[in-house]
Image (cartoon, rainbow, N blue to C red):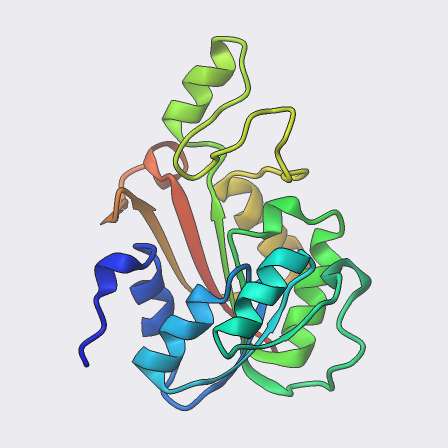
Length: 199
């Protein structure tokens, strides 16, 4: 049966394009397991998830996802070096306290790393900030008082982090409403997707 892609987030097909068929994939902060479920159908991957929230963890289990209830802030000591073809952190990095440590761990256990995050430099977010309120949008759907986000960043910030830590960027794609943004992406892009590899 043909998968109805409209039922999934618009960035899922792009992530899938960066994942080789039959890969072994680890999804950190996998939520309800929808991304892994999508990749299973589209790329025939062997998927594993890590999710701290008990409700999401249970939902993933009910979908047949192999998921551990672990706090990724503690690192990934249970996994050996290069034990996964791909490690994914999708729309989760902004809620992490130890960003560099997590990226280092991802690049240790995975041969390839995919990171996606909402761009805090997006012009609509900037306007809200100028108006004196914390931004809310499709990519940042929380109010200031209930947001899980602790480290919002811009595309330029993440580029600088990759440069300073010598993370090798294989590909980068910036989107707004499912359209690629090339002109001033840090200003006009709502969502950033990065494809990194370990050395």
